[in-house]
Image 1 (cartoon, rainbow, N blue to C red):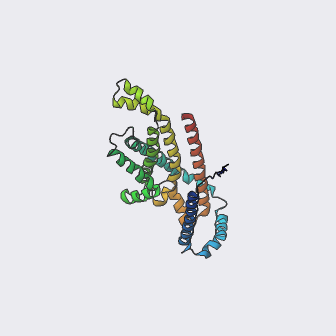
Image 2: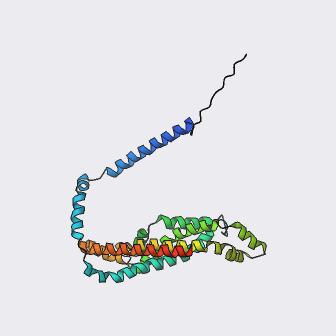
Image 3: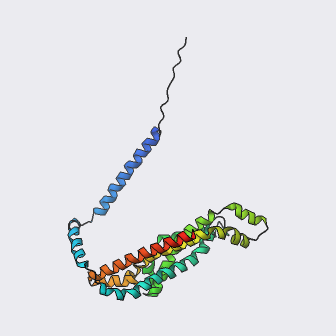
Length: 270
């Protein structure tokens, strides 16, 4: 009789080759972290680092109590900040809508020319921070609210355009095909088949971006683009720490309020 040997296979979650590559990946990650840490700490003055808790405690004691009598002077700059965020968001949304439709695969007029241009505009807008936009615009058109509004608008194009074109591409193709089957024109297909599907996402994205712009516009004054940031910069320059406390608390209250408004509006729309 011939003996039959049965081999029992042991199941493994990963093959030896996969495990080897995973260990090599972790090793490379650790090496990268060590290298980055060395670069970061190469010019670090550790005496300042060890003294940081004492300095923070000293500044904190100077910031309290806040100078509440300074609050009336902040109302106009705060209103300017809200206007910068609101008008900048509106301008950014207006410019982002056609860019989004050109970037979406199912609505772009030209996939070889216009779509790459639209995607480049979105990436360029998202790559440059609003503070950098404001710094450039202050140098070009001078300090003031206009520079802040345009900076917020240019920064908003990428955010709104990216999320909106993704929403356009995710629309239900069956509704579009049903409208096209009736003999509708391209404009009618866009108006009745795609726009109604993306409108909830459009309003949600716009309100969310406005909420973000409220936060970003509070610091644009640091580079001369108007708003409450100008007051913050002026108070920091003269080391008026009680005034800085009032400004920071007012910014915090404004951001919390804008977050609440944004959540309520998005809940009502979506």
